[in-house]
Amino acid sequence: MNRSDEIISEYHHARIFVVEDDIFILPLLEQMLANYGFSVFPFTNGAEALEAVQQEIPDLILLDITMPGMDGYQVCERLKQNPDLKDIPVIFMSAMNSMEDKIKGFKVGGVDYITKPFHPEEVHVRVNTHLNLSALRNKLKYQKLVEMKVREVSEAQQATIFALAKLAEQRDDDTGAHLERVREYCCLLAQQLAKDSSYADHISEAFIDCIKHASPLHDIGKVAIPDSILMKPGKLTFEEFEIMKTHSIIGAENLQTVFNKYADNPFIGMGIEIALYHHERWDGAGYPDGLIGRNIPLSARIMAVADFYDALRSNRCYRKGFDHDKVKEMLLEEDGTHFDPEVIKAFLALEEQFSLIMKTQE
Ligand SMILES: [Fe+2]
Image (cartoon, rainbow, N blue to C red; front, side, top):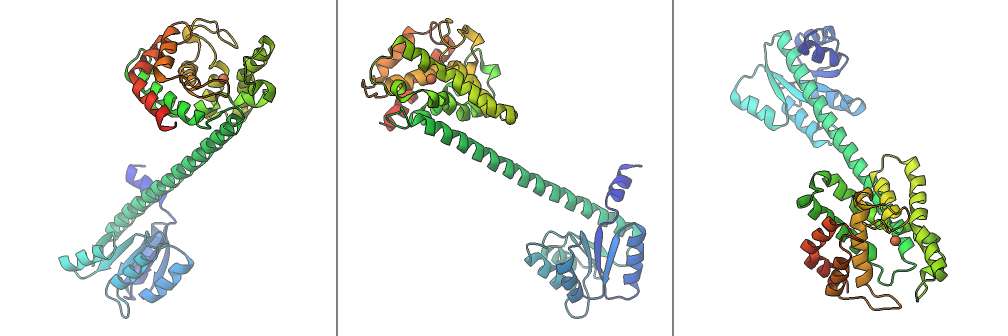
């Protein structure tokens, strides 16, 4: 079977309306198309065809132009005015052979023009070509619809994730905008690392998109920390700090439960990494696992810098936020001990933007 046969066989049983007032040509066309396997619906005038199209939408219409009453152009115009019918391909058939007639046919929305007398094979090939094009158009339309739906669902998911994280944050954040800022810092750092660092080859657009949506989840485990510890104005005792530290594991465990159900959600996957490891240190002295250097997921190493900067710049009930230069100095002091040197390098390239983001929210 060659390619054209495949296409032809694909459209067997396609429904074709044939509108033709010539009582000799109409049965001829009907028989010929039926022989090719199409389901044919014959009409001797436009009004009947327009009425029938309300009941059953055909895959294609073969439309005579010169007919008593409504002519083919008018029938086509009526079809094109209806959003449900405008995409039906219309092929005009006519003995009128002038360029003006053909142009008018295309202007009113026809997709092709067959001049009478026609050869059956020519009608067959043209019908198949337009069924094929129409099927491709419909497929594309369907794909776009699916894409739109997927985007809607994923945006709704992201909004839900953010809302949950925001709810968790409200207990201990004075300003209420920590998550938004941290998200911006993480995105900026990831973009900078993608431009200029030894990680450039590992940071894709998808990674940047992922960290944008996953970063607000970093402290979600704090929902399980008692108020007396989370909102304590002074320094935590050793025991209290041990409890506070569990927020990373609690957050990751809860996200893991969600991830087990929705394993194809990359935001939750990265959210687990960030929640679990954002308090790890480059030198291995962090928690919960004491991971060292590049064993700590990159997303969490980025988060560590973003979180540190924002936390130290922000006011707390027990202290005022530090200025940019002071926090920069503190970050540099911990370059290579607490923080990944590559991420610190990226921070230095972006420091003005960091400072500006904090300023606009003061
Ligand atoms: Fe944390």
